[in-house]
Length: 179
Image 1 (cartoon, rainbow, N blue to C red):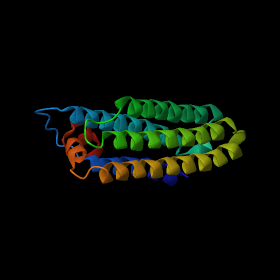
Image 2: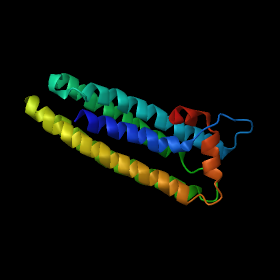
Image 3: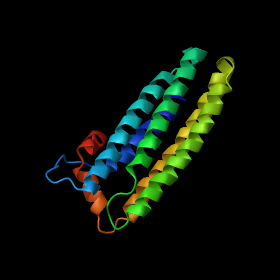
């Protein structure tokens, strides 16, 4: 279980690390600002997921209250993340609407997976319940990771001129993703 949760969180961070980031913000365009907001939202979300997964790593010693708190932390982080992504709207490019749709599709999928996590947390009863819930949470986080990967691939695919990719490479907040 430990490895599964940590692997999902690390995979999210690694997929997002493709953003790059070199910190050059000499002339920020609306697309640059969109990229900055996108990466900042990912950094915040990945940080919160790591903290929650750290709480869940030794689930056998968790109290039900600690487990519920970790679930609440995942919920809060994911709700904030999907809201931030939606608030970004469309980047100011020829394919901006397609990018907005890709981000929106991910946000909807993440919210569905979050509902699965919530059900798992609410359905626990004792240590056996926590063990089963960790399996469900890991599955939901894996699904979220797959949706996230699909979003990143979609953003790359719809950007033939590499305008958004360039903005992501230049966004300072993307530096935090690449390590």
